Image: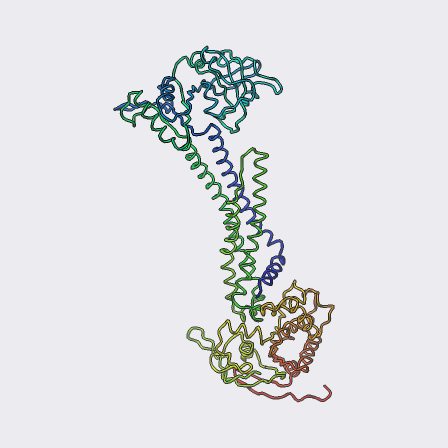
Length: 407
Length: 231
């Protein structure tokens, strides 16, 4: 039997009962579409998390205070609660650890901010001018904190675009206007460029003030809550990380590294951790979608078994006029693969549209990858073969004499 | 040419063996029109299955065009059916939504004949079976019973078989339509086709030129039909 004839026979068989073919195909369409959409959501989330981590700057290390641990009975505070990191530590890192390009200490606080008539609660970052370079903060309007601001404890603030839209009506220029952070008046000197990202810790929803001002007027203390360190290049990251650890252990007079009252995180490690989490998330979504694909596959098998029973006499006739077993197997296998393949094709389109709609309407970042499309095609063809084989084999093994007598 | 030598068929079901055919021998030459007649349970269906290469005998030889096919494999039998046998069934067994041409050309698909050639040969067979060009594009479920059976006959003819085997071809038809179908067989036989008709109705068998009676798996009689000159 020629391939073209096989395809023509398949076409006739599938169009003979259009409603049933359509419904069976629908199972696969929904399965494939949900796999595509779910993977798109998962990969989109992964990409957006990675982008927001990368947007913080490149070759970054973060030093944060940890829990102070003592020998004997442990009374642990929360991680990051220790107030052991100081400006002097940051200066020592900048001057003593080799291959450090820049250091930006920061004091992160959270306060109510008020402008005339409105208010918002957001993160305040007390920092130095280097922060803009290290953390990749760009200024849309006005300027970032200067050394002069820092030295003279000036009450000036640089706000993110989210804060701007929360506090000021569109069209007004906030630069030069005054806001109150925890009842202390500050003058706005700049607005940052949006870096994207959402949720808390979005770089767009922040207010930057001079570190000295923050310590004096807002925290009332001299500790800092984070030091961002930019390494000279990506190859020295591990060495810099080790250098900072050794320096701080020495400065804090801790001999056992396990008892360190600080932690040094590497940006690459954070990306890797985030990827692990989003991968798990993607797998979870994909397996839920995979279940609907499996159900679709069972639908195919069900339809094919019904078809084989219904067409018993036709199979008997085909065998009587000279069809070989393999002709019958191919005929039924091609039918089920044709259903899954066309279902898969429609499913990919539908899943793609779904992903686009989710991005447009729900604001979820999605990314349809070539991998997921190849996977979907492979899986749908595989389902056709897997769930079509048993019915096809059953058809091919029918005895022509009995099949012709079948009522 | 068909040659059956001492054909025996035994169906075994556990300990019980049933003899459907007990040593049947006969020869059918090319161009003959033979009716195999017998009551139900006589073994005529079993004989038809063996003659049609759908089944093999337990013992004995079945020579089709000089070739003993009694020990052929399933695959080889399918090839024999494809090339040498044309079947006409009581229940027509047409593909309901397919056109007449597609139904008739179906055996040629398995023979690997290209589509154009297939359609040409199918059209020739349809005309030979007594239908006309107007019927080519009809769907088979739009036809009457007599027309359907003639489509089935055309399908049996399309691969130019050694024999056309008809199993109760008039069983589903009224007498008048049955006569038309039998007329078609006669015409085909006059053109030189070998036809074997399996039936339990004497009236139908009388249309053949030779009648083999079988009963209880044995040949009861094998005789030529004497024709009334005016028939």
